[in-house]
Length: 309
Image (cartoon, rainbow, N blue to C red; front, side, top):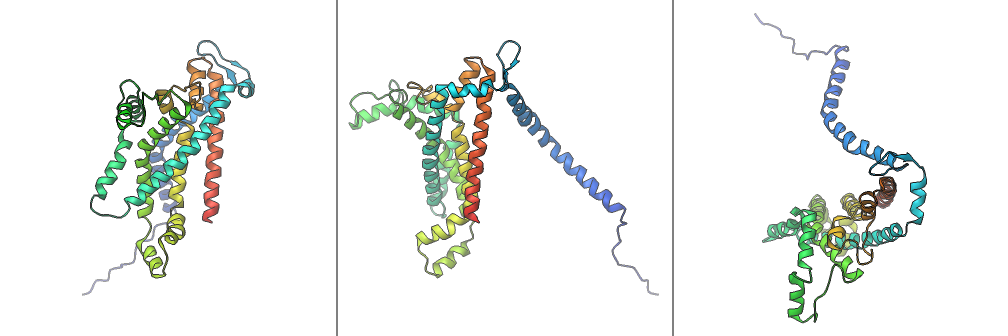
């Protein structure tokens, strides 16, 4: 006697499917809830508070009074703010160009596996593990004209006769000290991101280009750069944002000197808030800096996308 078994898959009733979908949505919402709470509490709420403060005269002690738009119009008469804005823009251009060139060069250097390449990658990335404030203090000690070894080395090699004050002697030396610190601290980190983008390019593409007789320069221009555009966009966005928000290196190394020649926008915000105790003006400058960051990033990403298209 043969038993016939119906092997057809069970059909889910139509009424059950919407319930399953709703259940999955609730599960997804529960997973996203902690992140949404953190973003709301530590980003959206402070952002709204800063925007609200920027419309008020908000002393550190005392009741705030609305004075919109005085905090924004008052920025036009602040000479230190304009000096800091111009310096921050120049610093951003210099650091972005030099840091990108150095990081991309290091990524190309350690792209191919070989003897000692792993050691080089580790050595280049080690400075990224040092805290930025600690790295700034390290450079401050190294460049000190009293206890730093750099002056002794330069005197021993005969490059200088006396002691050179790198961080406070001249605006060029102070800027160069900060740029050197940033290059040392962040080149390895950005190298790692660019190296990830380089290694994601299929090897078959390069092999096909070699078979077609493409030179190294043609391969770099026609294959590497176009396929690296998303990674390059990420790295440039991080560099521009970090440069416009520069604070630690100048506050520790130069204190904004000499003669406020290395005062950044964030240092102006700090002085307004915690030295002049004018939180309303500091909040207004913060909002203006946020708008500047958004404009820079939108223009930058738009240009890269147009080139990619």
